[in-house]
Image (tube, rainbow, N blue to C red):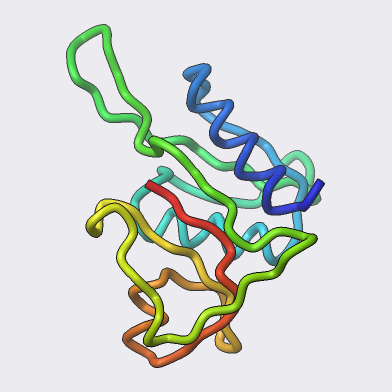
Length: 132
């Protein structure tokens, strides 16, 4: 399985189950994608695990509706570029995800960033995933 896909599935499953945090194996690309999720407000915090340096600790974010009910900040994740079919996109072709309620994550020559940031800088790259 693709490394990014594995991380996204772990995050989605942990949020569906109501977990507070999730641990994923460390790679620079996964860490960069997780940092974009943190910057865009989909997760509380991202850090390297103190116990094991080869793991990334992601604290999940929930919105409290009532005293007993909470909903996850991430509704769904969609992997666009896959191992068998890489998808590359030009900056002018980057579109809004779910009428700006979601974010695209793109790997550019200047690093991993959101689609909106990539469009402003005029950078295209590999279209990794969409989050909403």
